[in-house]
Length: 419
Image (cartoon, rainbow, N blue to C red; front, top):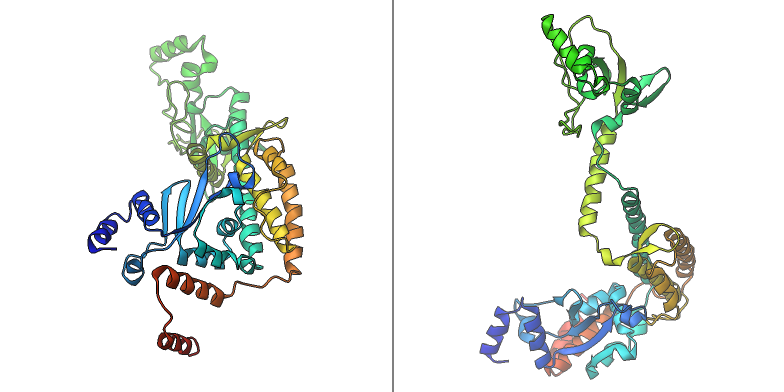
């Protein structure tokens, strides 16, 4: 690579598509394959075609400061430099172990040197797969339960609650919701005055402006004007100026997130005492905010209606969950990594919403127990041999870069390893 070409590619290294074309032109792409649902056999007409590839950087990038471990051409197309690729293989990364076991009809290009790695792919399978494959599946189950909660909120047409929804009137040894009590007593919240009860957290005394009630309450619609006129003739005030329990507009919509305290004249009787579950209201606000953010960010296309259950699930997500657990079981049984799924139809049924979430979770939990027992008694190695990974990386780079073995440097390397 001449200086001009090197400078050009360095200046455009963050332009992934250009960099990919550069690698391909110079024969530095050593493996490329279709992955995901196309490889599993679970693709639908709407499915994208996901691809991944492995590349080797020019030696100038390795020796210098421009190491690029991964490039993403777009959301469905990404590649890994050989060192990063082998590091992820060593950690038993599910995606890249699947790549190594791609069905033949998915492989788009394979450099002969990649066979050096493929020859050892069975040696990359270890007990860590129980954590990488199975662990990811466990996360998806917990995520699904949270998403199911969100979907239930949507199904019930959840609306933003207000502080009054968390207030309860104390009656004898029990309570009833404040909103229900006000309706039963035919009282308007905007004509109430409330004060804190001393030495009692979130407990309030409620007073009611009955004079204002006769002049302004919706429950006195026929006589309001007459009552206001009569009070003015007598030179009396039409209200005590209570602020209400919370602020509302002319249409009765609550505008405040706080309860409003009022000044209460001495000598008036308390109508009731009520408690305010402020912590519950704060938790509701937090959950509702999370729900709204979820609504904005979710991928609607992935959500499917479960047939006959009035429920929605992320079908793609749950299909992947079951697939990963089943692959983990197969790995622990010594069957290797089977990418093209023999039960693709059943996985597609999950993706299309033909199985309800509870059945999926029960199925997953049963398979997880089987998986855990199998890995516990497995003869698989605990981890990938680091020396094997290192040896493969050195060998591949030497061949690509045209380097010859040097006895002196090999001697130094051997002595360094044995320090």
